[in-house]
Length: 84
Image 1 (tube, rainbow, N blue to C red):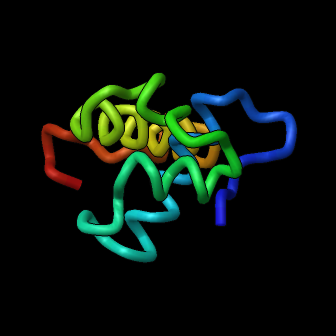
Image 2: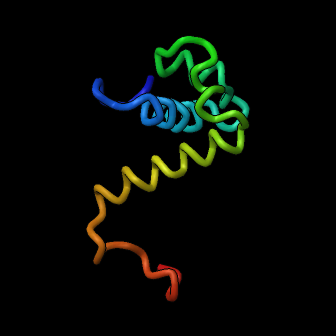
Image 3: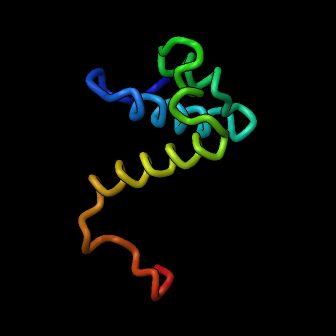
């Protein structure tokens, strides 16, 4: 399920698995245990990295922003002043 490349760091694997779970199962499906399983990590790995659900969401959102920044060139970024 995880979209992380084979050489991804553990935080990247966790964040990518969290994003995949959010897309597939929604917020109710996002648990530390489910992320461990989806990322192919030992049980407790996600909890060690992101202790709370909020921390896990923060990690996932930061990873999503990082991935999107690679795709969008700066001149393509939405202008927050115009809402577009």
